[in-house]
Amino acid sequence: MTRLKVIGISAVVLVLAFFYTPLVQFLAGPLVISDPLHQVDAVVVLGGGWEAKGKLGKSTLERYRYGVDLFQQGYGKYLIFSGGNLWGNPSEAGEMAEMAVSAGFSEREIIIEESSESTWQNTLFVKKILLEKKLQSVVLVTSPYHSRRATTMFTDKGITVISAPVPDSEFYSASGTDQLRMAKLVVTEYVKLGLYQLNLTR
Image (tube, rainbow, N blue to C red; front, side, top):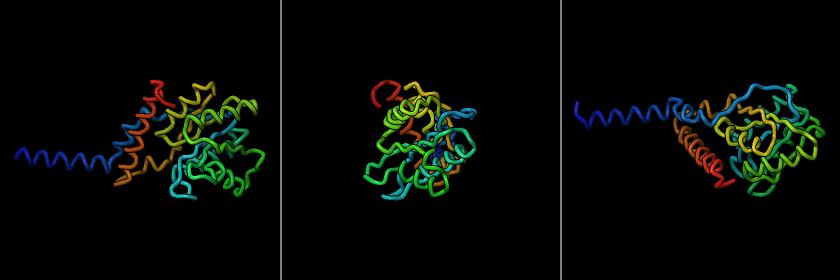
């Protein structure tokens, strides 16, 4: 077998491994923190972006569903939705809260934080809510690849955090061209986490 053929076969194997095996998810392992669940003061659900203007993205919707499920199981006394909208109104938090109310949850149990435009702002504004409500501990719901950075920021602000990344996230079932999007998210998270730990960005 010629050297050129070996290189060609190797390239094909690598491409197939990238697109059709959980290679990206394996490399993302250090980004994921999942803690044993127990009752806390509030379940906090972080927005995960929009698919299009006025349409919540898959990440936001799966975070919403898991957060609501945990709240329904009694893991928190309050359900806090956090997330603004760079496009204006409505906010991610507002949309999630509206869905929760439509599903039968009491408005008295729901708190909306709709000014944040980054994970650091999620942290600051949720911390403010916790102080106002005299709450200390949260179950933090986000996507798996985002859980370490989010948990690190919340912990750094003195919040007691139980990290609860979405267990059945689309991140784990992605294949084919979807893996390109997941790979981009993973690389971006490693960069943002590194910059945060070096105190170069918030």
